[in-house]
Amino acid sequence: MKFAVIGDPISHSLSPLMHNKNFESLDLKFTYEAVNVPIENFKHIREIIEEKHLDGFNITIPHKERIIPYLDEIDAQSSSVGAVNTVLIRDGKWIGYNTDGIGYVTGLKQVYNDLENAYILILGAGGASKGIANELIKFVNTKLTVANRTMKRFETWDLEVNQISLEQAESHLDEFDIIINTTPAGMDDNQDIPIDLKYLNPETLVSDIVYIPYKTPILIAAENKGNPIYNGLDMFVYQGAESFKIWTGLQADIKTMKKSVLNKLKGVK
Ligand code: NAP
Image (cartoon, rainbow, N blue to C red; front, side, top):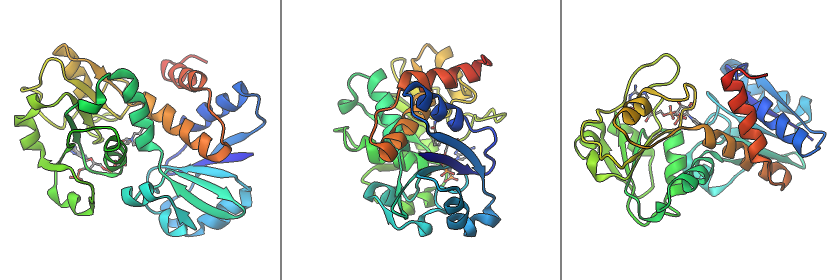
């Protein structure tokens, strides 16, 4: 079987390494490659993919929303999120899924014991936030709170969540058991922290869905205060494992996938 990840830029994606290591470990003669498709070429996406005879593909920045009109079917959750990161090709039909939310929540359940009763604040209201909220809402008994820089972004939300500003989040920070940063503030060379952590409760788990850098500025600030922290590496690994399950019906070798990414991040060959 043949798979790929489509994005732009895509050359630094760790998905090919992670998936190919998983295939190797499971003794599968499958392949997974990175395909760069700039926005201006996206209108040819069906031809580009069909030429490669793929069985499925992942789709990443900046195309997670752009892919939707090219699908034959979309599952209900991806449709509600408005973004797709996994496409299954079956008998020439393209079916869209979103595994980002389940990827994050699968990992979170393993590091946080009482998720059902946790008061959760999500920072950011974009695609990743919506995917995570859609998944969390299935497990959590409390009402989720989502804080965003601009309130306009909530116009595309149909989930029952508390919608607040970043300033309101800052002043009510001590009310939350888990805080999840889904904004790209703190990614790459950006040293921003989306909110002030002055009122952070010492027990609150502070999480960021970014994993490069491994500790973003908000995680460093929370760790310096003595709080537990949790980054986005597991989310990346589990979203990939879920895509693999959709394409093949098989369980991925999670340990091998995670180790391959960790080694790459540490510069180990
Ligand atoms: P998106 O749809 O563009 O949403 C970005 C959100 O962040 C928006 O709510 C935006 O607010 C907010 N934001 C952006 N810059 C900000 C800043 N400087 N301060 C405060 N808020 C800011 O992006 P996305 O697809 O959700 O992705 C978000 C992040 O998640 C990216 O860094 C991406 O790499 C990461 N991600 C990680 C994984 C993983 O596997 N670990 C998977 C998916 C995504 P406005 O509405 O006000 O613009």
